[in-house]
Length: 340
Image (tube, rainbow, N blue to C red):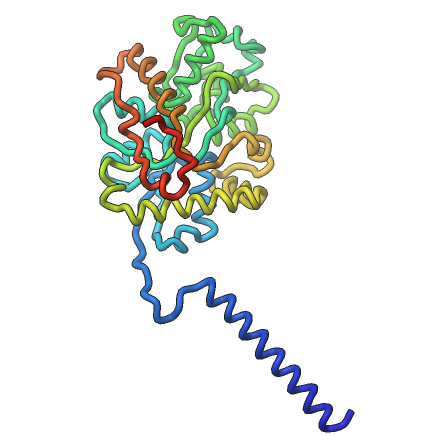
């Protein structure tokens, strides 16, 4: 090859490299703000989170850096129940909580003021009555006369009583034992109770420890578990920009979880201390989607009637007033189906 050919060849290589670099920097420039663009101040948000698989969108957003990309500095405060997470938020220890609808019902009956920003997940199979087969429990009717553990004031209590009712078992035909969710696996193993209404990840711990000695009774027809993002009343109004960034990050997490279910499952399992395979058996029952629906109001009204029959005071709350619609409506108007 002549010297001129060499020069032309290297000139082509250098030009190609330069063009490639320019193209690469052009793409990179689209992904980040210009150097002279004003940077958004990071907004700090504290989430009191009940560490459960239904908080999957929160864990996905944290693990993938979506909160940070939306200009949020998010701190997760772990709790064992949504009830405890809600209490921490109402006490001012956190800005928002992840919580099921049952603790919201009891809080509303006590006159507590809160705002539901979005339902972030629903499921029909996250909760079950786990029963010891070696105590003679082969079917739900065998629960009569047995000691059944449950965490009071939670959706597990509502599920248990509804489950018994549909089997024509009166609550006075079983011995209800008040337990904390985290104590249930050991209480079943020790024989302090013969059965318990419990949710994941504690339900998974029971199944792993007791294997064939435990039978789990689900009922997808009687109860849909909602998992909600809830703030103190007034927080969203005074922190509207941060609240919008928060829901936008969770909406992006929803898209990422749908596109990469295996990665999402791994992130959730690691966060909850669960085996990814065990979680895989339940994964299809989790519906990770941001919504605010009329069905949630109806569910809370039904549970409020139940709670009042159990002795909870107060009149029937206006649950429509607990829903803060503007932010989700601005992001996903089709996801808001509340009757006006």
